[in-house]
Length: 94
Image (cartoon, rainbow, N blue to C red):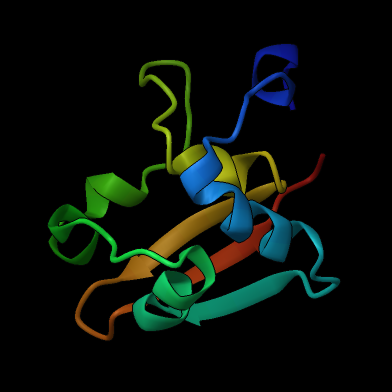
């Protein structure tokens, strides 16, 4: 993980998701969108349910979104299945 990504600050509304993912030993964590909402205590915005880009992982060409900081900081990538309303968080090499 680059220094810029390590220094990311997770916004307070997404901190519960970061803490959950960071505390899991499994390399792969699968959560329904309802489970993510339960963790966050808020409803996900509409784009989270219909736009793959909402779940994008950081790269050099795209600014790091507030929500993606929660899984990037936990050394995870997010791969959504919008039809099934689930998200697979895979561990990355730190």
